[in-house]
Length: 405
Image (cartoon, rainbow, N blue to C red; front, side, top):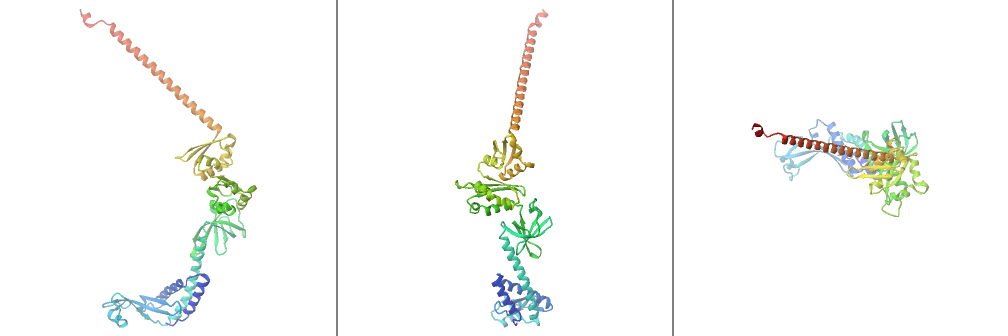
């Protein structure tokens, strides 16, 4: 079949492969499939339509339409099969079970093919671009991106990320922040999804703990280089975060490195989070030391840990109790999340009262035991005395034989 306008389409495919990285082979295969459908739609009455296939030369653009038929011994189904005898007339090497491609030259198919080719190429270009964008942003998952706010209605924030839109749902927003149109905002790429019509959609978060982790990686070179490791993060977005850091190098102060001179390094992170407080503590493999540090800024007197239950009883000075627990239990809650331990906090006075109460209870039990013992002893004496009296009475009675005499 004459190469018609498909030759021009092939030239366009070459350009797309060079400029946009869209595979020419992918486009040609898609076009061949589309032309098969177009043939069946427009030549449905043709007996050759059942097993039709279309091939396009990737260099010249020359197009051919074939009816693929299986070689059978006799009585072939005309639109599906061909007899061995007829197949041998075409090529004597054909055998039963082989497929013979018989070329078809449908009238006016060139015009239909050209129209379909344009539609397919445009469609596949769009799909390929969407796939490339999806791949590009999917590789950015777990990274920080920045964009301009396009829409902010209180429930959802839409950001312009350049090639794509970023969406920040309500639960991924910091509750204390108000977002304004055209404001530049940074966020953590939480997920990349395919939305309506296959368009990629980037889910952005500012409330996720890993947003804080990434900010620390940007601001603290030692973390980025791996000299300091972030062991754990717990967060109440917009209010307070706790971050546990550790360094194998004894010459590196992990907490001091994160805070920086006069707090310069950490202040940049606090500014990005619009004033969210951040407690940086040093991670320790000893759970008692780690838990005590996690409760900062409160001072801890003692920590009693139960390893099997992952439970810690913490004792603090009386004047540190409210600080250790925090407003609405925030400090204790964040410390528990950070360490992954259950933490019970008691003041020194509370512990003293508990110990006194336990001692009093123990005394009461001891006294009760002693009273019970004395009562038992008294009862035993009475029983013994009663038995002795009965024995005496028996001995004082005259024997039956003597009375009878």
